[in-house]
Image: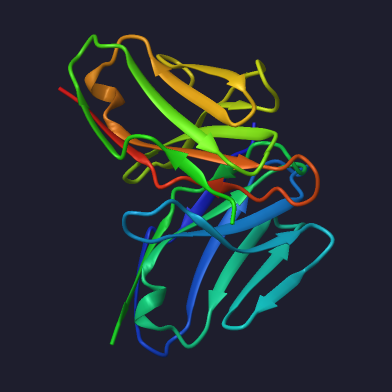
Length: 112
Length: 113
């Protein structure tokens, strides 16, 4: 089955710096790659996603890139703010409606 | 807004007890999922369901069962709770059509003594 590896497990940055989280996946049939953010005491929430027919997608300060050949995708957060501090999860799945397989998560701390 | 409600935020049970974790969603989603979250292990899929009375095993189904008698409700059952089932349990739902976007509940933190 699918296996998703996520790095780093923890990341500390200064406010205003950029943060990058990387994931690799094992199943070449996977074609949907979302990123979820989990704040303390809450369930994860989708922040951005990308499909295999697209190489990059941006939404304000966050962007995701996908390299299907290498089977890896990354989350980029620019101009980080303290409210970006949370646990971030990457995930992969083969098609809409199928179960997502998640990475182990990255705890991002942004200090002011 | 889609809402996924997990009835219990915190539960404390004893070893051997039967435990029910309830999850209800209010937006007519076909798919429902139970994940377990542990520090350093991320989110691991226990069971999922694509339709009423239908269930599929995820990556870690041992020690768990599920029930989906109605479209909006998906229950996770621990037949005989053990201490290694102490964890945060997250329920999620999604539509079959379109994007595979999961909406999560706030979680149920279970402690088994």
